[in-house]
Structures are given as C-alpha cells and as structure tokens.
Image 1 (tube, rainbow, N blue to C red):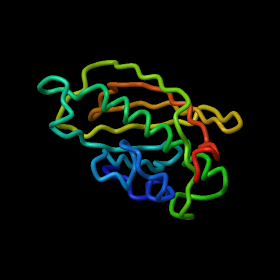
Image 2: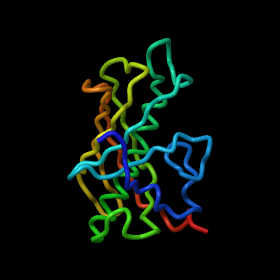
Image 3: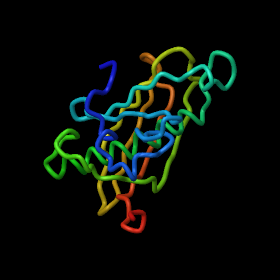
Image 4: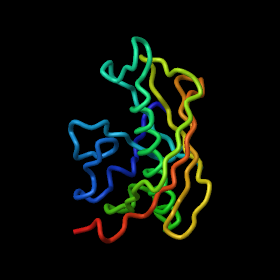
Amino acid sequence: MDQVTHAIQDYYPEDFAHCFGCGRMNEQGHQFRTGWDGDKTVTIYSPKEKHKAIPGFVYGGLIASLVDCHGTGSAALVKHRDNGLEPEDAEDAPRFVTGSLAVKYLKPTPQGVPLRAVGTHEKTEGKKITIKVDVYAEDALVVTGEVTAVEMPDTFKK
C-alpha cells in the first residue's frame, strides 16, 4: 500500500477537521490520512525538506505528531468498525482526542523516504481506546509509540 484511499479523516465533521496533524480543513497542516490495511491501520506520509532535524534526518516532533494523529485516527476507525461501519459508510465519523502519548525513538529517521505508521488496537476501556503504533522508514522500524485516545467529550462540541 503506497497511499490511503479511504481515510477516516475525510469523514470527520467539518467543525472538527482542523487539526494541524490530520485535519483536512487545515491547508497549512500535515493532513495525515489513516485507513485500514486488513486488521491494522496505516498512515503514509512523506516528510518535506522543512521537517529536518539535521541534514538527512527527520525532526522528531513531526514523528511524534504522526504517532499522535495516527493513534486518534486509528481509534476512530476501531470505534466506527465496532459500530458496523467502514470509513466511507457515514459522513460523521467518531472523533477522538489524545489522552496520553508515548513515543520511543529507536534510530534516526532518514529524510527522503515515505514514513508508514502502522497501528494495532490494543484495548478498549469505555470511551478510551489504546493503539500501539510502529513507524517505518522503508523497511526499518524507527519509532514505536502508544496512544490512548478518548472519544471527544460533548463539551468540545458546539
């Protein structure tokens, strides 16, 4: 898979699609796109030259953002599928926010190759969904992470 065709972010309500990482309404943002690849979730992103830490390597903050948004997008996919739906089945997909984020950098991430975040649903506890995230640069595992995502509370909604 070299791109995500049915991304959950395409179905977030417009009022909640402005995230700098994954918001389709944020023209200045990264616009990460998360979809299913079998029973795993995937986001593919090619860092830009401006995302460098030092020449030849990607800035760790971008990678943390990728893990974060991949985790919340994956939680939305899990909830949607638990409801019997796929991303393209409904316009208003469930929206999650970050409850906790852990990122472990295993090796420097090279610039100039697409990054592939792969998510695994670890557990669901009420409104919280935990996703394990592995980030690959080509075939090399460069980052692992874990996101506990919380279904967006009604207080966030207008």
